[in-house]
Image (tube, rainbow, N blue to C red; front, side, top):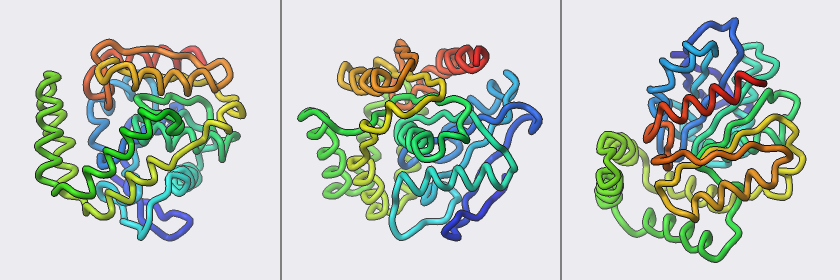
Amino acid sequence: MMDFTTADNLQIHFRSVGDPGNPALILIHGIGADHKMWLPQTKSLPAAGFHVLIPDLRGHGKSQVPPDFRIRDCARDILSLLDRLDISRANLAGVSMGGMVVQQFAVDYPDRVLSLVIADSLSGVRTAQESFNAGLAALLLKIFPPGFQARLIRSTYKRMGHKEVGEYLANRLLVMDPAWLLKARLEVNRFDVFNKLPTITAPTLVLVGDGFGKLAVNMARATADSIPKAHFQILSGGGDPSNLLVPEAFDNALVDFLRVR
């Protein structure tokens, strides 16, 4: 476990696993989560030959909380991490909001990217249904207490047969400041890089689980369709976050993709 200082003087916590001589693979968690979201991958991915780096995004986990939250700042923090470790280029994988961070990184710092894996994510809110769902998510954070939201999360994942995932996500929500988490949610709702996706030249894999319905699949497909030569794959039984719901399928898809780069 280590820390580094960002360009705007925040302390960011990260975990390093595996041989530093191997290709770097940075794993980015989703909103409200932390580096522990990637626990299954801390065994499988180093064993597959990668130096795995897992930061707590600003305001999450053990990292310092800034006054505001911007996805572009998170991308810049990843750049600071690479510079801190003297890594010229890295593979990046992000789930949910983490997928937004890696897209922003690829747009802002294309020369530092070896490849991208974007999972259970989106590139912007475009349709009326997407806008409604994004607004509803923010409204729930605004009007309901954390305890209610935690119960909703536990119930959702228990119905999917993943009680332990619901417990992890609910417990993470309960330790975060609700007002700050709402700021992060609103930033997610504002995120839109669709017009920049055609500029991404790094090899890209877009993964999405089918457990949250056609809307999630279609949003991921729209991302893949907008990135030149991106690969698209649906993970049966997966869903946000697929790395926890179907870890073996997620890891196999990621490793198979990265090994042919």
